[in-house]
Length: 265
Image (cartoon, rainbow, N blue to C red; front, side, top):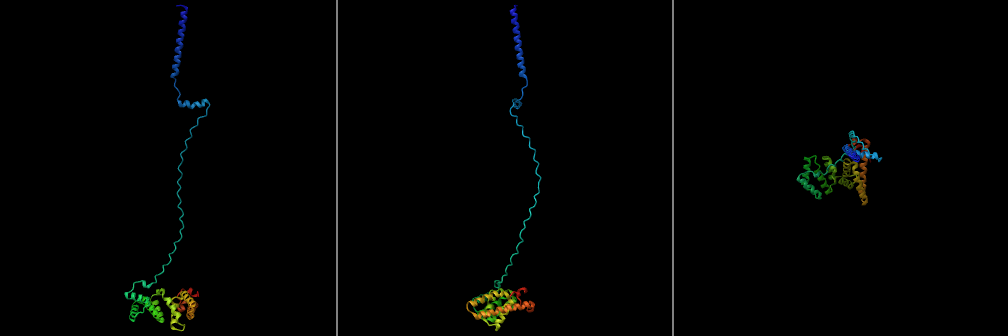
């Protein structure tokens, strides 16, 4: 073999050795483990001097449940004391209560200003004797007497009616008729004296508004005689109440109102 051939063979050998070494190095590099993408990405900013990665926010601690606060019972609202109901006025219409048929007819008759016969008057009288706590027979007889202008009898019937049932005083005609009788008779007559005493015993000061009203009406209509009699009636009741207040209600037993009211004259 010539020298040139020998040199050429040597060069070829070194080329193959270099090629094999290069292949071996490439294979070794390819077989080396590769870093994960997340790690690479996470490291990249720091390696490149970029902005630091934002750390994950720390997990907030679990909030402890708030202690249960027992609700304090609300103060009970003060309610106004219940107002006592106003007393119900007692029904004073005695004729609203059941009554015998004959009395129903006679009651309607006197309201129509019709006179009662003697037989009808006796019928009422006998019923009143048997029912001493029933004022209605005497009230009907009192109205009949007023229809006839029997003033003295009217006052007597009202007196008996009040004695039978004190509610008779609330009859709408009783005080009106008694004041009329007093205004129709002079103070010296039995009619005036008995009627004035009955008004005093039954009504007392409560009669004054009615008397004053009739007195004002009499003056307004120029009925001076009637006005004078009603003035006497008023003075009589006032003087009797003053007398009772000075000596005490028990002295005469005729103060129809509370003892302290007898002085209000």
